[in-house]
Each structure stands twice: as C-alpha cells, then as structure tokens.
Amino acid sequence: MGVRVFAPATVANVACGFDVLGFAVDEPGDEVIMEKNDGKGVRIVEITGDDGRLSKDPAKNTVGVSVLKYLEHIGQPDLGIDIILHKKMPFGSGLGSSAASTVAGVFAVNELLGKPLRQEELLPFAIEGERIACGAAHADNVAPALYGGFVLIRSYEPLDVIRLNTPNDLFAAIVHPKVEVPTKDARSILRANVPMQQAIQQWGNLAGLIAGLYQEDYDLIGRSIEDVIIEPVRSILIPGYQDVKRVALEQGALGAGISGSGPSVFSLCKGEKSATAVGLAKKEMFAKYGIESDLFVSRVNQKGPVVL
Amino acid sequence: MGVRVFAPATVANVACGFDVLGFAVDEPGDEVIMEKNDGKGVRIVEITGDDGRLSKDPAKNTVGVSVLKYLEHIGQPDLGIDIILHKKMPFGSGLGSSAASTVAGVFAVNELLGKPLRQEELLPFAIEGERIACGAAHADNVAPALYGGFVLIRSYEPLDVIRLNTPNDLFAAIVHPKVEVPTKDARSILRANVPMQQAIQQWGNLAGLIAGLYQEDYDLIGRSIEDVIIEPVRSILIPGYQDVKRVALEQGALGAGISGSGPSVFSLCKGEKSATAVGLAKKEMFAKYGIESDLFVSRVNQKGPVVL
Image (cartoon, rainbow over all chains, first blue to last red; front, top):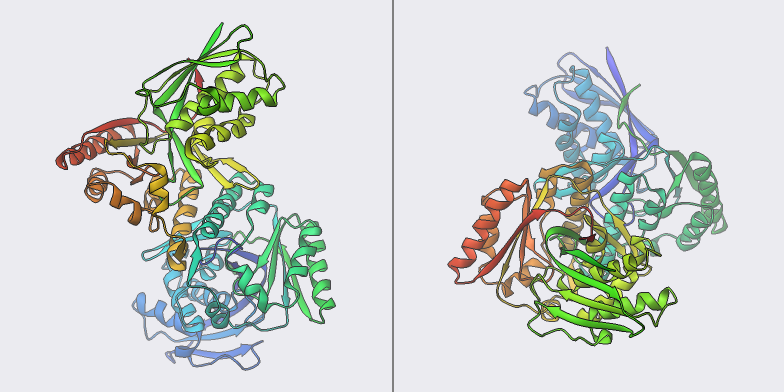
C-alpha cells in the first residue's frame, strides 16, 4: 500500500516581502509516490520530468534528504521506503521547484506511517531538503508549500512561521519565460546595504500587504505589491521584464513582480477571468521578445499538499 | 457656543515600524477649546501648560496653522475663531505632543462648524500643523491621534493611511524620563544606509506585528516588537535604557521600545494590571539612574479625539 502526494509550487518574496513571505498556488506542483519496501532502506527508484538532472542518491536528493531526516527524527532510521518523484514543474524558474518536491516527500512519508507528526511539525525536515537544493536553509518556499496560502517567516533564528489569512478570490497568473536564472546568481547581484528611505518604503508596503490580506482589501493588496529594493536589480536578468509587468497592470492585475529569484513573473488578480487575461498578455509580451513561456493560472492555494 | 476636544498622545514607530506605524493611548493628551468670535479672525487667546514656549501667532502655531488650512479648504478663510489650548503632556517626550494639539484643533473646528468634513478628511490639515512643529510632514503621530488604535502609513506619496485592527486588551505603559531629546537630533544620528540582513529582520518583525494585531495573538505581537535598526542608535541618548527595557520584559511586558524619537519608553502589555506593574518597574529603574519620570498607563485608544 503506497501513497501519492501532490505539493504546490510557490511564489516567494511577493515583491515587498523579500526572504520573509511566500504563497502557494494550485498549479503547477510536483508529485511523489511512496511505498514501504522490505528493509532495503530509502531508495529513489524513479524520477521523471527532470531530464536526468537530479541525483537518485537519497543523501544528495532534496526528497531523499528530508525523508532520511524525518525517519531519523521519529526513531526509524532504517525503515525501507521506495520513492518515485514526478517533476511536473520547471527547474530554476523561481517557483519553488525543489520545495514542492521536498514538501511532497515529507508529507508522503508522514502519511505512509500513519501521521505520527502534525503537518506543521514537518517544516524542519523540508527545510533540510531545501538546504541541499539551494545551499541555504530558506523557508519562504517550503513553508507556503507545506501550509498553503500566504505564509510569513517572521524570523529564522528561532524559526517563527505564521499562516496569514488568504482571501478566497485571489488568483495568480504566473508566466515562466524559458531563460534560466540560477538562484545563486540572482542572490549574488543584490546589494549588501540598502538606503534607509527605500527600506522604509519596502516595510510600509509589506505592512500594507499583510493588512490587505486580513482585511481582504484587494485594492490595498494591489497598492502594496511594490518592490523598490530587489526588483530594480534582478529584473535586469529578465528580458522584457518592464513591458511584461506593464501589460499585466494594464490588463487589471492587482500587482506584479518577480517570483522568487526569477525569471517567472507573477501577478495577483481578483478572480480567475482577470488572471487569465493578465497571464495571456504577459505570455504574448514575452513572445514579442522572442521568448517562449509557460503560463500557469490558478487560485492561491489554501491547503498545501494533498493525497491524490 | 463653543466646543471642547481631547486628542490623545501617540507612540510612533512601535519598534519595528519606523516612520510607518503608530498607535494612540487613552492618556495623556491635549485639550482644545474653541468658539466663534465676531469676525476677528483666528486668534489663540490662551495657552496653558507650555511654559510660554508656544507662539500665540496662529501662523506659527501648529493648532493655528492647521485650523487656518482647514478654513481655507472649506472656503471660509475669514471666519473668526478663538482658540484655547491646554497642553497636558510634556514636550519633546516622543509622545506626539504637537500631533495631539493639532488633531484636537482640526477636530474641534470641524465640530464647531457642524462637521462639514468626515474625520478621515481632516488628516491633511493635521499634517500641515505637524510640518510647523517638526519641520517635516510626518503622519505617524497625527494619523493615530486622529483615527485611534494602530495606524499604518503605507506610503506618503501618495498618502495612504490604513487603520489596523487593535486588540481590545492591549494596554500601554509609557514612562517619560525627564531628559529632553529633540526630534531633529534623534533623526540626525540615524544611518543613511542599513545592512540588507537587518532590513529583512525588521520587515519580518513588522509583518509579524501586523499579523499579530489582526489575529489578536498577543504572543506574536510581543515576539515582533523588536527593532534592530533604530533602537541600537537612539537608545544611546536615553540613560539607563537597556535596564529599563529589561525590567519591562521581566515584569511581563509583551514588548518594549522607544516611543517615537524618545526619550519615552513604551511597553505593550496584555491587560491593565500587567501594564501597571511594568510601568512602575520602569519608573523605578529610571529613578535608580537618578532620573525623574512620568508614568502613563492606559488602554490603547480606539477612538481618536472626543468632544468633552
């Protein structure tokens, strides 16, 4: 008897919330299938959709690492588990690809063993998986992938993760242009210092966004989605970015920005119709720049991972 | 027939919300008495509690300026009004002294004329008064003084002011040590740039505080009241600050910080009993440093100005 789990893609940073905010979407996401084997240890028996880029060595794979950490924690380090990973979303897209796999993995193993841990308790293991993928223990993708909705990482030491209210009519239109921006490069071009005035603008906007989520004030959410610190630097790595953002806003997006470290461009919209129009306009604009892209339109995810 | 109005003191910044956040308290505050005269223009006929420091020239007085701007706006620039101002709180204390007077003034004139403007519409005139007092058009004292509760100034250009949810059991214990820190000095010692990592910590905390206010999660409010950017610099100007803050937390304060540009030290507490204990401990600690202080304990104000 095995278990099959879907975990969602995530948009980290959300313009004004660099390193502390993220949300999950209903599509795309990754799938993990897991079943017990007879004492053969943790094995990754199959990976699809990765073009052979991911290691099948559990100690070098984000899913493997988080499952091993989990088994160690619950005192069953030698349990035999076979893992199949179906990558259903692009790498290096800024959509939390490794986080989706990792969260699907820890959620699946916990299901497989009869839920010895609560969903919130799975976060540390997912963060360990993320460390393998990104070289750092970020939580702004894994936390929303695990919890669903908008999630705040108030602090890393100690880890303090807060589920925020997520208005039900909030949809995301995400376009992934097929140019690759490795996370490490996107991070290295950031400045070590920021002008105080820009920091004040940024935290004013983040506070406005949080208030907008609780008040379910879509206009306030839109006015607050502005990034005066990271976007001016990172957008240089995304051809056509300013035009893509402009058409999103012209088509009625509440706001738009770079998803994670890019190159995907997210927009938040009120309602699915608006999100579809916004997404198509962005895809078309990338095409004018000669860039192929994938479009994902879905409700902001409220649940996190699910058993399929 | 005249009108007598009270407007509350305010705590700007609230540790992690420098320049964008403030809240009002029930005590202390200022009082303005206003009545029409027969075409003699705007006159400030009496000021008490200011030790003769405030100008009675309406063009040079925060209350006078905001009332004049208001009258101009509603098309009655030549209306005759007599103003009495009772200062009931200290100057240069970091408690929004000028904002309380200004807000009492614009609220009073609007009452006197039968409320031609809604309460929210009075903000620009109060900001003009604040410009005279502080040399800059800050809103993080006038906005909470006018609206009551916690108020976010998401943006100054354009002005975007958001009333936040304010949990009902939130009390403030404010101690004003009798040492003066002029706002302009407190501002000039701040750095022009901040390390990115500290900016991230600060906006993570501000986001946590906003979420805590909406979720009425007192622990989260407490964990979020932390200031890694301004406090380390400004606290140097307040003798005994670290010890005063320490005893506040030891006595059960949710959090503590510098009120506005200081030197008052605020604490947020759950319930009046806790706030009283915290306030007394802070006052006692200042006394150990040989510093006299005033103590104000009151509920976080929910209403803004009131007619007495």
